[in-house]
Image (tube, rainbow, N blue to C red; front, top):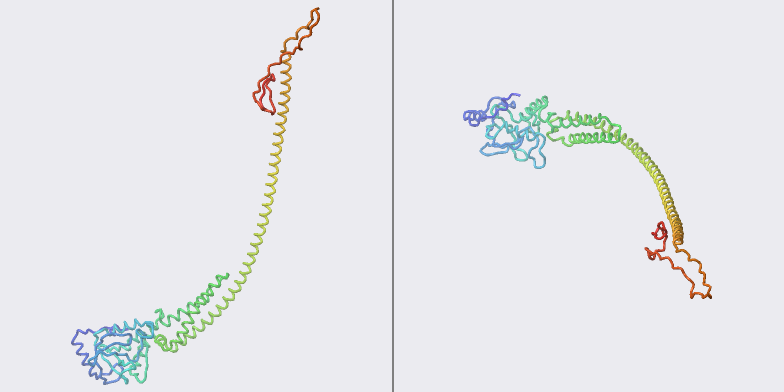
Length: 407
């Protein structure tokens, strides 16, 4: 593009303004639309409203001007959101006609539209048709509302340049444009349908989810093509290209639906196989748990038997030891009694040995016998003192048999 088409006016240059005003007031050379001897209305830009509407001061007042034969994405519509590249179209118009720009206006058969906006072609100082420039950069599309077709061909020719260059609303690199959305939807769906399906239920389900998401996006783009036939974004693409996009989307959607059905069928089959394997695994686990429980019960029973045997053995050993102890005590008592008896016998023998000698037999005198008053009783040995008064148990006597201790 020639950069000179987009240069701005210098409002402060009085000479330029005077020349422009005189030129636009009575132009006798061929007009930009090809019609000779047309008069132009001079004006001054006050502000830009959106991509195809601005306020211009002419005839002594500020008036809202709608550019003829071009339509740009909505920017400030009360019932519509900001459309794709609406802001860029507004900025482009602001760069062509900043406030204070001296312009020339030309009109068609109808002077105003149904909103009482003035319908006009707007020229800047270098005779650039602003209406066509918006189409030339792909930010506006040709619009024909009969009988106002005076500048339609100029806008259409400029738009053909944008189509050839793939700019603006035709740029597949601009994310919000229809070509970009359709291209992305087709590429995403193609990638999803060509992705490896996987060999597990989870993997196949993931693939199916990806195909479903891509199908949803592709169908949304398809619906946008159908529902937005009258929108600038769709009109920018053109009837033939829109139809081609629809056919391309339909082909990929059909392929995607077949891939989705196949993935869902495989996922269902794998899911059933995995469910069967899961049931078998659970049954095997239950059988293993039952066998383990049975083995544990047998182990516990054996441990209880061994413990019972141990307890019985310990009890028997304790009883044996106790019996032997009691027998040892009984033997000790018997032995003590024997020793005590022996000691007593020895003591008795010792006592006897220590008795005083028996007196010689009495020989009575020859005199007549007089019996004694009482028989003679030898004195008793002295009694040993009992060191354990009241003790009646077994006794172990010391040698000599005179003392003892409890056994």
